[in-house]
Length: 84
Image (cartoon, rainbow, N blue to C red):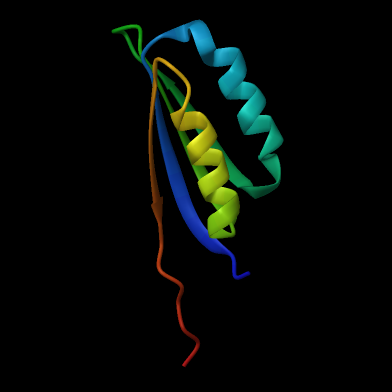
């Protein structure tokens, strides 16, 4: 399966499941090529992940994160570029 480049934006609204979030991110570390965390003054935090993996790998990561309570997730994948 062909690899894609994408990003996952994670907003942490409640910190109760942060340990689970970090476990999931660690299990998918082979597709993560960059990570940035931004604490916010309103108590919420944002994590941005830059990824390179198959659509199945990226979907697995975003799906597992999306099932955590108090956490919002949005992913974006770039189209495959053709080498014409």
